[in-house]
Structures are given as structure tokens and as C-alpha cells.
Length: 359
Ligand code: PMV
Image (cartoon, rainbow, N blue to C red; front, side):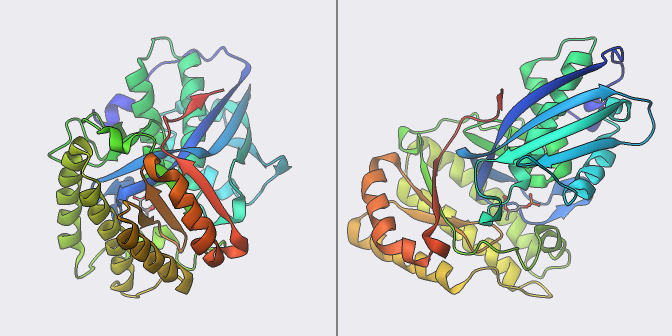
């Protein structure tokens, strides 16, 4: 599919008002996206687990108006919010060609997260996918032709990508691939696709405990970080490594080889941070406690012949990944040894989920 396939050509503009509500999950990348071209086109493919409990719930109410400027109000956790307005304004500008009814309605956007706002967990993925889904739902009611579920999901992912790259992996579950890759049929730079390969039972209901090491604002935004991959001395090697790792992971997901899974996932996390440390200007997002946790995980894994591993986003928090079969022991370990490194002892227990839901 190309961009042209997502342009809405005709719609019934007689609908006066209405309201839609969606919940959309967060996701955690196993092979990381880092580096993009214009229009949020990724430099390399990525794959993520969709999460189950960390999500954004958004209700979009719309009322017909004269077609001039964009008009919308945002309520975040019940309170009117001005801070998110510029982001949504930019999002609307980017997606207008694909949802041309945007100027015909005033929107009331009511949104909230199931995780604390100041947790350092990026809400842009779940937030942008939730609003993209609401807009697509409105498009479906205005549309004069029926749309298939596949088209709906692809276009929602396509729109979400224009809001925040990794948001395009927050529509479906349980594993989503974004970015063209030879080993994944139907993969696209324009939207995320549900991973259709075989998945061994070892990876069913995989667990993710998110250890909140640092809840503050990131010192370097991911927008700036992506840009620093331009002219980065290791960029081309890194992009081709991501292609290889995705192909390898596909085979690992089928075979259930947990040891091989751990190696790829941890190497991807450290490579992401290595790219940050070797860009110009260079920066470090890990904190001393991030490293303390990593070392504890390695020690625990060796001593207990466990399959626990870690991954990192563009921040200091640690996602601890492990098979469901190890749930009890790993939570004991987290409580006794890792909580001490979490800010105010906070961590979030999550697991792999099935994707966004209409409410
Ligand atoms: O979607 P963005 O622009 O916030 O980038 C996120 C990139 C990482 O979280 C670091 C990796 C990924 O693939 O999610």
C-alpha cells in the first residue's frame, strides 16, 4: 500500500455530532527504531511487544462547525490542558490530507493514562495511537464505502506514525513489526503490521516489569536523538544490524529459544544507548541505578539459570522481560533486590497484550 491508498476521497458531511472512545496500549521494542527520514520514515525496521495494562484512554467528541481553522480542546485526566495543544496542532496538520474532515468539526479530546504521567513512561505511543483510532472511527461513520478491519488498522497505524513514530506499533497485538524487512512479508515503512510468524508458547503472555528509575523529563528528546543518527559514524552498520536482528528474532520466536532471545534483546537495548553515547553531541540517558539493575539481572540470571533479561527505551527506566513460567520467582527477586533502585520504590507490572480496543 502507498500513501495514496490512505487519502479519503469522499465522505458524508451531514453528520452533525458524535463521540467515540478507544483505549490504546503502550509498546516495548525488542529491535529498536532509532533514526528516521522525513515524514517519520524509519531508517531501520523494528519489532515490539504490545503491552496489556499501560495504556491511554481517549474519548473524542465532535460537533459540526464552519470549515476554517482546526478547533479542539484537550482535557487530560479531567483538567483542561494547554501544554499538549501544539503537539496535536502539528499532528492535525500532518494528517489533514488523509482525514480531510478535520476542519469541519470542533473536537473535544478527553484523555487519560493508566500509568502515572510523571513516570517517565512515554505516553506518546499510546496517546497518538488512541487519537488516531478515534479519528479513523469517525472516518468510518462518515465514509460512504465500507472499510475492512485490515484497512482500518493499517490506516490507524499510518496516522499514528505521523504523530509519533513508535505509536504505529500500538494498534494491534501481540507483536508488531514496523519498517520494511526482507524476512517479514507485508512489512512497510508506512505503518506497523501484526507479526504473522509462528510464536512459540515460551513467548505467550511474556511479562514486562517496568522499573521506574527516573521519573523526570528526559534531557534529550527522542526527536533530537533520531536526528543525531544523520552523519553518525556507525549509522549504516547499525541500520543493517537491525535488519539482521529482526530476521534472527523471527526464527527465535518460532523456535522458542529463550537464551538466543535474551542475547538479541539486551544487545539491541545497549546498542540503542551506544548510538546515543557515540553521536555528536553525545549524551547518556542511563542513570547509575540503571546499571545497578542491569548487573543484578545478570547475576540473578547466572545464579538461577533464569531467562530474565532487560531492555531500555530512550530513558533510564528498565523493562524487565521474562517468561510467564518465571513470574513468581522474578517478582520475589524484584521486590527483594531491585525495588531499592527504583525512584520511590515504584515499578509497574505488565505483560504482552492484544492491542487497542473500542470502548
Ligand atoms: O517514537 P519515538 O520518536 O518516540 O522514538 C522511540 C524510539 C525508541 O523508543 C527508543 C525505540 C523504539 O523502537 O520504540
